[in-house]
Image (cartoon, rainbow, N blue to C red; front, side, top):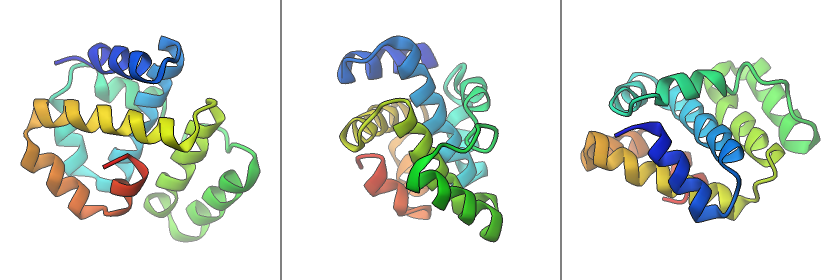
Length: 140
C-alpha cells in the first residue's frame, strides 16, 4: 500500500483537491507520530511514502495557526512539551487547510481504515487505545 492511494481516497471522499488532501493526510500521520510514538511509526512504516508525507507536514514545524486552537496548541506545546500539544496543533493545522471537524473525522476514518489494511486491525486498535483522544478527533 502507498500513501497516494490514501490521499486519493481522502480527496474523493471529502470532495477536496488532492493537494489539500495530501497536506491533511500528512498532518494526521504527523499527529499520530507525535501522540503515539514508536507504535505509530511502525504502522506508518508499512505505508510507502507515509513517513515522508508526515515529515513534510510535521505539526511541530508548521507556523502556529491563528485563532483559539493555534493559541491553545502553542501554549500546551510550550508548557507541557511536544506530545501534549501535537493533537491540538494538528487540529488547528487541519482547520487552517479549510477542513471542518466532520471532514477531519472523515479523513481520519479513511486513514485508519487503510492503516488497518497495512498493519492489521490490532496494531491500529492498540494505537487508539494508547491515545484515546485520537478516537474522537479522527472519526473512530
